[in-house]
Length: 190
Image (tube, rainbow, N blue to C red; front, side, top):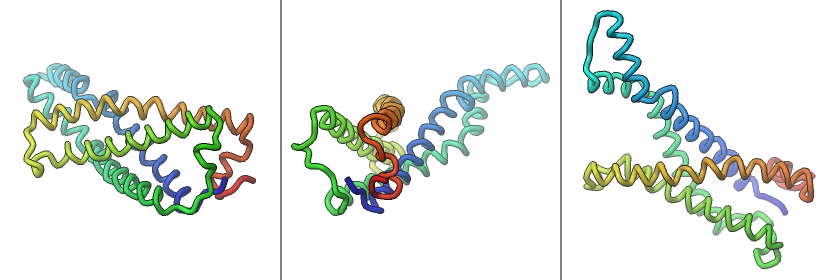
């Protein structure tokens, strides 16, 4: 097995972008959650003798996280570009890989999981862009919200896939596929 420089660059850039996207979602759901922070703002401001409504606290909490969420959008654009580049590589890459028909049943399963992963990345990119540009696409806010709900649900597959992928690589590297990691770094097995 031999991977082209273009494929290896795609792999590592894609990994960085996905980890960054996971990080922004983690921050949004935890430390920068508007629900938690709006309650905290209301409580702390009340202690200072300033009372605000729940709606006002929500606006303030969302403003606090907006800067971080802009990074999610930027990384989303990067993911969309990387998805397009991966589609290009699918048709034009010069990496040397085993034919699907010659793979063991286990490796066919792994390869099929990668195809599901690629389809998920395509969906996440397209749905993210639709959510971001819903007004330009003449979609209602409710429709954009519905798409966002699906976008967030499908995201769970990526959250499961990433640790399984890393664990699978570690197991394969230490069992029957020595040099797997070096192949993805320098293009061929060491």
